[in-house]
Image 1 (cartoon, each protein chain N blue to C red):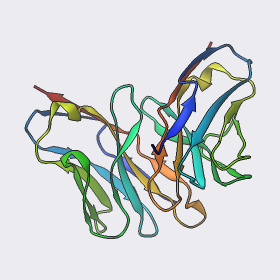
Image 2 (image 1 turned 90 degrees about the vertical axis):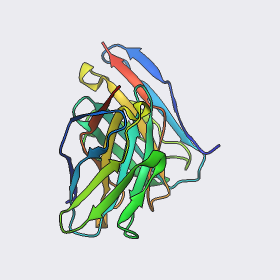
Image 3 (image 1 turned 120 degrees about the vertical axis):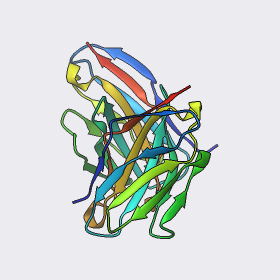
Image 4 (image 1 turned 120 degrees about the horizontal axis):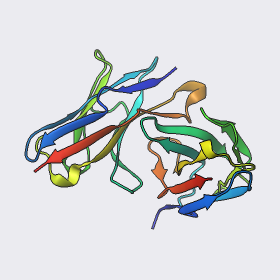
Length: 111
Length: 115
């Protein structure tokens, strides 16, 4: 089944404790992206990647890092999480031509 | 630069009545436009997409949208609302040129369906 998977689905952590949210897709898509969703703001793009080793900042990249060492994986790294990064995070992939396919989301709470 | 505006943050309709969710976009080029739906505590599902083919686009679950270049609009409609349509809906425009890989989301419209 074609899908985008994210782990963990739920995470509660404390300020400053490094964490990684994994994202994997099995559709051989070149394009992958991370978004955060906050009430009233829709989805805002954090980072995206056009292919292996090619990444670029989205609209809200501060406090986040990404890497794209393999085509199928695109982890999101929070080196020193802060409470304002409490949010619902979505990973997405696309062939680059049309629509994106989304993962199920990761709900992160930073205390 | 591309942008998208969803004109209503909340819409309430009675079951069996028509649905209209409004979306205006801004783009220098012929855009790619999408509508996604998000049910409570779920991920995002593609409803339909416009990619410069037919201006009237049919999607899943009886939804459709019409691309109107003169009005820079891409409104989502459904003839008869069902309780299961209650969800949040997002209009999305895809960037062009150097921003081709940017997808810009509207702030969402929450649809409530009354029995």
